Length: 140
Length: 152
Image 1 (cartoon, rainbow over the protein chains, first blue to last red):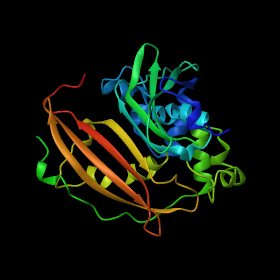
Image 2: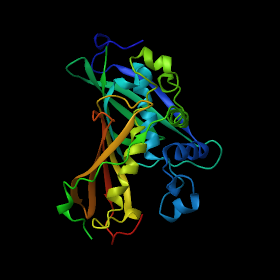
Image 3: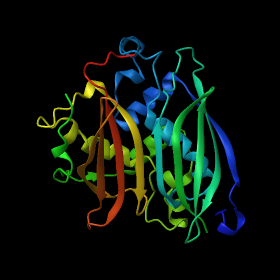
Image 4: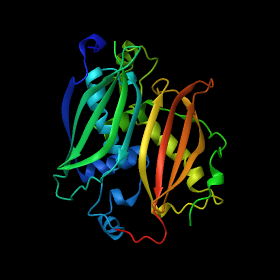
């Protein structure tokens, strides 16, 4: 189940995933994370501060994106470093359908000690919502 | 008003320990929709070599964000939080957080820069367990829009 360093090369693609987000998802994440900023649940407030709609927590998007890596490698503790830059908000309409965060990843570099760098591409519609989204992963 | 660069290097006292509970990890994993058994099943976590269920990679932010309130609310720094957005986030792990951990966070201001009239503040939170071993460092960049700049 663990991915071996010998199985991968630069360019190896990780299985892509899509993560749906609804208003209910954001309320649940607010409670679990303790981040109750109203831009994530109160449309009136969000619009008043200049946002197009209620937006997803950046940390929620970051949490979803790394699942492409942890589901691939099996052991979440194999992630040694993980960083992102938040570039665009993810608006979540109140229509019961919400939106989708789409994540693809590929091995971008082979490192010493059987580690690899994985670069993630995280999109919402046409927008790239995270930039410089990278993880260093210990392989077997 | 630009932030005072003399705050670079300021370190805040370690926080009181945060005790990581199994059910808190389960709640967080459920909220992100992640069914990895290492987060909820002790036997699955042990099979991976951990003493207890482990937390998802971004879980430490729950603790470090709370600790970073020391910076945000520092009256001497005078940061206007209503103008702040989260710019970057990084984690460097020595090991995953697991249930039963009692974690303290030592927060420091690593950098203050001015970019296009905005203040860019880099805040690190070093997380240690009860025995003093390093668990994870979370580095957060906050961007405070200039006060005279109209919101978009």
